[in-house]
Amino acid sequence: MGTKILTSSSHGYENECKEIHDSWGRLNHLVRSLAGRSKLERQQIRETYKAMYGEDMAILLQKMQFQNGSKVCAALYRWMMDTHERDAIVAREAFGQGDVNYKALVEIFVGRKSSHMVLIKQAYYARFRRHLDQEIINLEPPHPYQKILVALATSHKAHQEDVSQHIAKCDARRLYEAGEGSSQGAVEEAVVLEILSKRSIPQTKLTLSSYKHIYGHEYTKSLKKAKYMEFEDALKVVMKCMCNPPTYYAKVLYTSIKGTTADNGALARVMTSRAEVDLYEIRSIFKRKYEMELKDAICERIPSGDYRDFLAAIASTTTIITSHNSVSL
Image (spheres, rainbow, N blue to C red):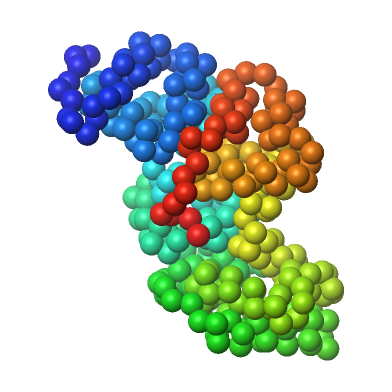
């Protein structure tokens, strides 16, 4: 296949793309070439490769994944995708063939801005000819996570930008009266779902901050006091993901590396999705809580090979961390 004329926007990565093309199929070379790259660098490499060889590198990686089913191919494929495309794929895989991976869906609906959710839903429909929100509504049998996700999907449609301290205080009191301040001993689901559906994620975060200020402890602590029910358990996970993402993701990574979770895709999913959001903070919390570096934990528990090298490269790279992120809250 002949080399094509490059545009000025793709200038600068011709040598890297030639090396990738000439050594295609050697996964260790792909890992070395791509794992430590920033989002912008990956986009430019992808564009340059297509300009030079007429093929989309991400599509080639997807084909390779289908052919050999390797974890590293799947991880590299997602790594080279635009963020909204990656999230759409993660969402589709969350529905799976058996149990729904609700936590993967929660991470998307809680962690992404409303403007980015629009792109995710568009990408989801373009790829799978299905509406993401409707897929969640249609899930059977009904599940507490499903109710919360439907409420969060509704909140994203509102596109509320401003936050109100007054509303936050009022909602905090409503949460208290519908939870630990109630004589029922269980959370009133209708009240919680109404607040989640009518308020933006930033507004809900402010509400939870007001709750702590007014009542002296985190809202999630009150859920522990409630009579154990599936809704409270699901709500606690959602609130932890919303209020303190680095701590939430540090725990997800730890349980995934140790192999104590049924969520087999969590490790690569979190590493690729948080690399340019808050991975630096996640690594810091991981080290403080579990007394070891994230990279060391990966190298200790994951079998040697290209997949481990890919994860370790992301875990040890600081240049891919950005101070401003346009897709995540």
